[in-house]
Length: 278
Image (cartoon, rainbow, N blue to C red; front, side, top):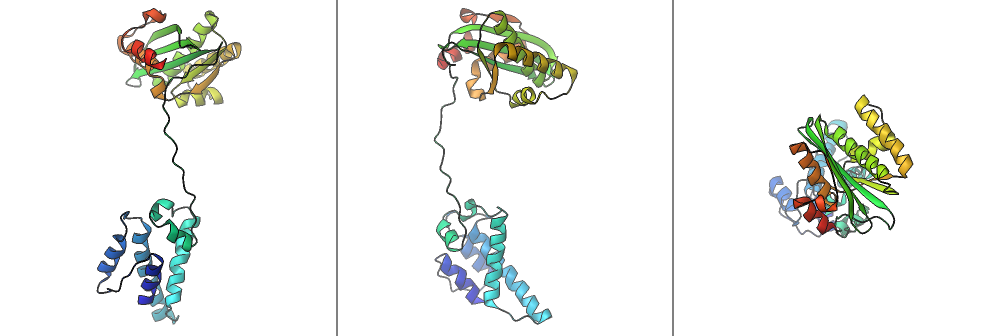
């Protein structure tokens, strides 16, 4: 029995001879790493050793199978490899022990941390226009509003708009914001156009042209038809890069505002965010 513990202790570079209680052994293994946790490998191995020692003992007592230290070691390793093959055993559980993992035949690809990037509004290519839209529903369903801002490659605002929608769901508010914005750009000849929304649901609905409630389906078909006229591409943008239009949409919902704005008409918080975007 002690040979099993010594085998795995040697792999992990542990020197342990005190076997006075199982509680002491498990505690020693768990806290032999500064990365200890309930699922860390140094917590799992003692319990696997105890379990397979128990099954070997039962096999010897009731089926006459010879008790084998090598058999226990083999069963522990086999069980770990099963967990590894099922991707249940991850590199996180081997934190601080990746070298020991490699010795036991477990290879984990080191994840290279991604460099942080600043999320901000980015101008379209020269001669293009960008429409950022957002919808807001205060309750979902609740008082709703739609808003959008159309800018050129220099960040200059050509048009902005707010529409009061009464009681609507957030999906209807988001789709209405896109539809109204694309219609306005067509009316004012602001093309070619790219559209950015921060609602992934809208992207999915427009790509799949999914059927649903008639209000949703009607808006989807209107947007798709206008897209073809404007060569408009709808893309996702993070909410942090959609701050100005997000503020306009919430204002439209709470105050039930309907209006078309030009650059100098935008004031307050939205104007501040627009200045930061540039």
